[in-house]
Image (cartoon, rainbow, N blue to C red; front, top):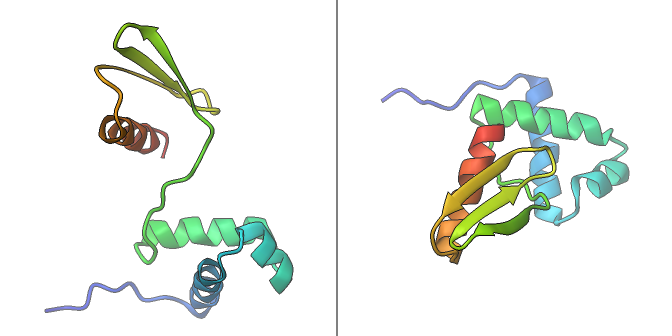
Length: 108
């Protein structure tokens, strides 16, 4: 069976090492970049590229969302970027998780 791991350039390996180190420290990307003398925007850009390349897993980004009842059992989730998702039914952790994952998929 052929290895499906993407080949990385030296530059990609450099940034992958930093992204993994950042995750291991538990620091925010901003704090890690500052401590390493890196630009935080570069760290984010390389992480996005490595996710697209399939080297890093996609992660759920946390954003403030406003959840409001529209009518009985009818809800709307409003994200800061303007995306709104409406749904009907009971609100429990499983349903809300599914709705939020769907909203993330729409905006990415």
